[in-house]
Length: 142
Image (cartoon, one colour):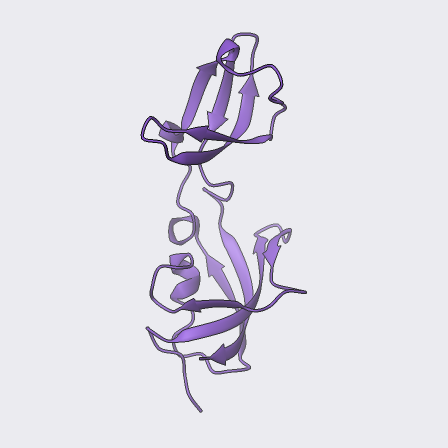
């Protein structure tokens, strides 16, 4: 029976949870996730768990934050003057917004703090700093 090796295109079903057991993503009810192993298309800790797996095999993989979305980077938080944000933009804590860099790149951010004069926006990935757990099933080696 064939085993996964780096460079193979695979299809997996997965459920991603935090260490407290809460689910943050799942392929349940959708087509399996397809990607090339070792290509950097998925987080490194999950990618590294696939070589050697066989079709139909299931496993649970614990991925530390350094092998997932990395630690929280304080430099990715920025306070901006509140008057620079249009009044129709909601500023509730947790609201997802988009900013544009001077080079024109769109960056997703989350409102993390609001005062009368400033709004603090966080461009870290929402799962940065979190250890993750994935239950995976290898569906196909293409």
